[in-house]
Image 1 (cartoon, rainbow, N blue to C red):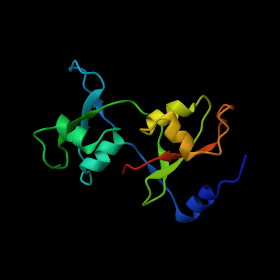
Image 2 (cartoon, rainbow, N blue to C red):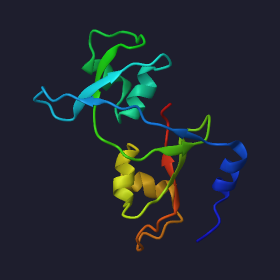
Image 3 (cartoon, rainbow, N blue to C red):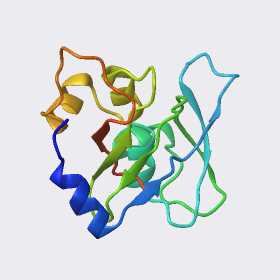
Length: 145
């Protein structure tokens, strides 16, 4: 395994664990994959959309009567269960994720609103012919919060 200078830099800059917003699935809708999120005081269209793998305009279209946020307001969002969080470098749109047993790059990518190719491009030192080893540290998109 090669030494990753980005990890050294991250340790000097400090990292923050970016905890994802959670949603409550809408079990009454005929549209699957949607749910509800309760707005917090610092939320913006951009960071809520990023956390739910959406765009600002898509989120606004799902909530046509909402022009701005207020705390405790409930909005409709794309709602998918995600189990992975990242350690984000403050001020950057990326962070790091540590691989656990059973992880696959495509599954990790899905949790970070990316695809296999995007993840591979962020981690060019990975050997695509080998299984991800637990403990491997990957750079991941991590723009929320």
